[in-house]
Every structure is written in structure tokens, then in C-alpha cells.
Amino acid sequence: MTGMNSTAPQSSRVVAVTGAGTGIGRATARAFAAEGAHVFAIGRRSGPLEETAALSDRITPLLADITAEGGPEGIVRAALGTYGRLDVLINNAGIVCSGALGVLTPDMIASQLATNLIAPVLLTQAALPLLETSSGVVVNVSTSVGLRAWPGSSVYAATKTALESLTRSWAVELAPRGIRVVAVAPGAIDTPIGEHQGLSPERRAALREWQLAHTPLGRIGRSEEVARAITHLAAPAASFTTGVVLPVDGGAVVA
Image 1 (cartoon, one colour):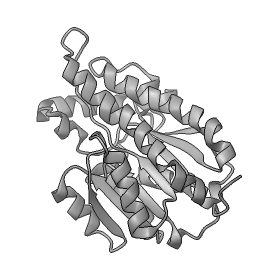
Image 2 (cartoon, rainbow, N blue to C red):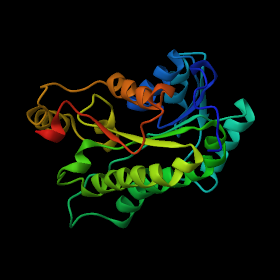
Image 3 (spheres, rainbow, N blue to C red):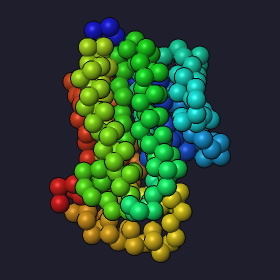
Image 4 (cartoon, helix red, strand yellow):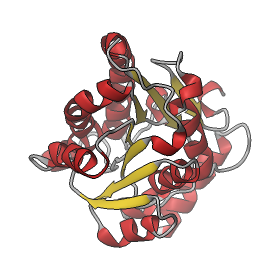
């Protein structure tokens, strides 16, 4: 294998987290920084990114659109120029455009494909040289809904299911280059995703009620719980783990 730094101490690792302005991305950036890593918090809105960066002097905000032409390459250049390396890439950014079949528009479909699927492919591809040098790790953030029906959000669920398939394929494809690829599949987590969808308070409350009814542990998860699963999977101690998709969903997937 090419890379020889898979056991590098946490304090020397460089981590890039997309969608780091809120929710799971923010919690993940904070969790890695708490372990001593240098973290690039990547997103499209400067305000939330600055709030994330304020949590630790080890977090650097990086304003970037992962769907823009040259966006992935710009992120990799920033990591190389600032720290000279990249050890962990977290493909967390995602959007939901709810709509049942029959009302979906080309823009609704294209935007979800661009952010949830195409951007992770291009960003991971751009990062390969750095990840190979560091024997790095790619962590894809999927959703437990991808393994079940989600009427009204079928395109979102499909993009996340595709991301899980990429996780397994990349794990095999990149293993000879010393790169591990894993994923987490969160269930009902307390994040602003409902607000970002533009759902009314009543719709969000109804969604939470449905989620609670389908979560055996009987509560909504916290972003920090997903972040902890991500840091565990990306840790040097998990160096023999690749190709897995870990549900963090309170048992929803098996209920």
C-alpha cells in the first residue's frame, strides 16, 4: 500500500467536513477538533460557518459551493495550501426537496442529485492524491430512510441509497491505495433540515410524530451522537473497518 500514515496521531490529522454550518456537520467538526484534529468547516453560508468556527480555534471556515465548477478542486487546494495534507473527508452536505411523483420538477431533481450525489463523487475524486498519501478515510453521510420507503421524498432517499452503494464500491476500489471508505446512516436527528426544506411548524411537528412512532428507542437523536459515530469510524483504531454503513437511528431500520 502506498500510504504509511494511517496511525498518525489525532492532533496531526486534517479533516474536511462539508455542510458544516449546522446540524450533523457542525457537531462533527466540533468532535474532531476536540480530539485535536485541524478541521475545515465547508459550506455555502458564511454566517453559520463562522458560528461553527467559533466553537474551536482548530476549526477553519471555508466558504465553498461543492456543486460549483471547480469547487471540489478548490477545497483540496485549500487543504494542501494550509496544512499540506488531508486525512479525513466527510461528505455530509445534503439537501431535501420534498415532492411526490407527479409534482417533481427537473430543478428539484437536479439540485438533489448535484449536492447529494455528484458533489461527493467529484470531491472524493479530487481528494484522492492527498488521501492516498495519508492512508486517509472517506466518511459518507447517508440516511436510514434510504433502506425504507419515504413517500414524498423519494429522490432524496434515492440519492442517499446511491451514496451507500458508492461507499461499498469505493471501499473495494480504494483499498489497494490504503484508503478506507465508510458511511453512517442517521435516522431522526434534531437538525434544522425541516426548516431548510421550508416545512411549516405543523408539518415539522407531524414529521417528528411519525419519526418517533417508527423509532424503537422512542426519542429523536442528537447531532453529537452521529458525530461520535463518525469519529469512531474514522479513527486510526478502526483501521480494519471499511465498506460498512452504520445506522445511527435508534433502531428504526430494524423495526
